[in-house]
Image 1 (tube, one colour):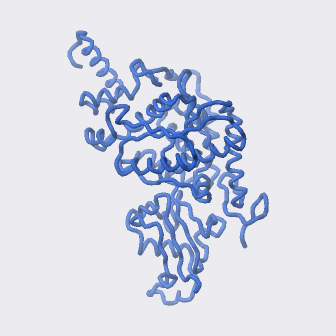
Image 2 (spheres, rainbow over the protein chains, first blue to last red):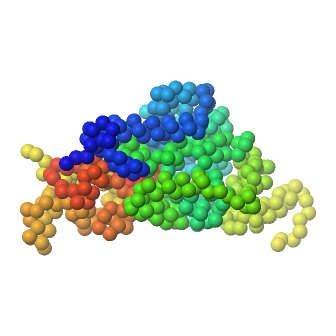
Image 3 (cartoon, rainbow over the protein chains, first blue to last red):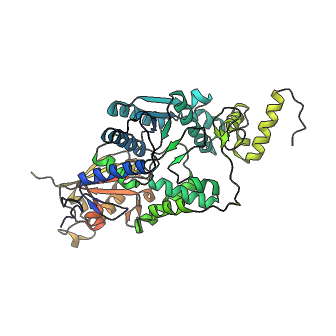
Length: 337
Length: 109
């Protein structure tokens, strides 16, 4: 006997992980979009005329985000100007294929696309970096550079806000990761729908309450064009364990994902905990919690042929950076320590 | 003639475990296990399909597809365009002409 839709009694096609409700295809589309709309409205994310770039990788989350934002902007008259913004890390066999998907999305959704590449921004593609440093720590470079590359791309195209495709599962995973690392500062801000320090470009996550299962089912039933493959360079093992753990929990009790986010949102951080103030980098001007941002430190290491130094202890890296700067400025330095 | 095969599709990255094949048509006769002749003429479930995929088709990294005798959490199964959680999950009895799609949610977004 087939299950029926909880709202309209047509044949159900989906069991919702968040509630256990059964829904037909039409009601699923409607509710999925409506809940994202409600997330946007509750957080007062937009005002008319805002220029908003969707960070687009060609993967499922950002493809669904771009599609839903286009639908909602028309349906609810947000009056925002949407564009697509992609980062080309320069990874042959991975990013070149997914960028083709983004280019098709540009046509399908009629949204202007801007691609910024590591090669152009930093002088190094990820392929170049891996040649130089090998497969250890390369993800550190990629992660740090990507964050800033989106900001730079957004600045170039004069947008006011970046949207990213982080979904509920990603956020629950990040809460767990920050808990496991004791990273209190990130723990306290990782569930926020908008991040970005004052004066820097805000980033928002309209899919923060959308389950990965529903995102993938939405893409499946809407027949959206997305790209899925593993990065050819090594994945983050620690995050992989956290992800498997979370998926195992979800298979027993699907609500756990929304409950972890709820916990993350309501942690009270003791006032005695020191938080790094977010400011801007003295060298490149982009967001940083240190005087010089991590992207500049890493890039400096690469350009000096000492990349390994910069992925180890950051204190040492900052010291090395400062010393090198002094030398460049003709100052006398103490013997190497 | 009505179809006698089970159509199996892989998406979202699962196809990488099957030599990049996105689609398989598996005749019901392939489910018949000669070492267990008693099972002839019986029905076959999705659980049997998983076993068959594991034994005859899976090319690499079993642990990314199966966990025990079930699919790995994070891989969605859609039977005839319906969430398998509404169809009895691994106990769903397959019929010729059925279309079973495996979609990974575990790959980067």
